[in-house]
Image 1 (tube, rainbow, N blue to C red):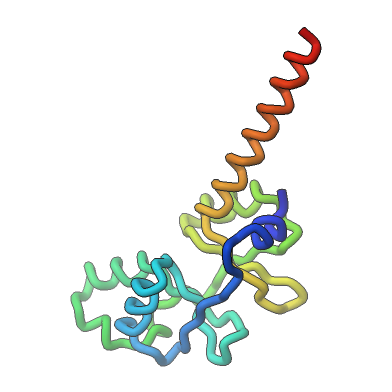
Image 2 (tube, rainbow, N blue to C red):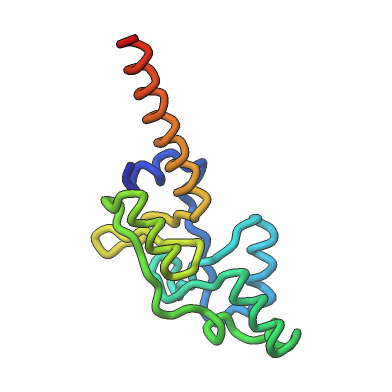
Length: 145
């Protein structure tokens, strides 16, 4: 299964973005409202300038207190974002997220951002894949019995 297949089967490919000069409090509100774990930081709504995750916010809140909520997102975002290609296989995407210890991966094709997948999206599809393989093997064994 490829990243492209995962994107096709997601309920929505909407890419939620936030401008770098927006406040962290505003970002936290969007994360809460949409029940998501990360936002793409984008000056124009289409480019990938960085990412801001709930973990980023909580880490800084713990270190520096509530004053971080009035700071711009650009102060807290991850600027060097690892991305996936739609042709990556699911296991490659999962390895990127596991190795980097993050849960969201923007998908880039031809220089354009076409979606974002979460570790939950990848795990869900990987489980479906394993279940299908298990059923096929069981059918082969039973069919030959």
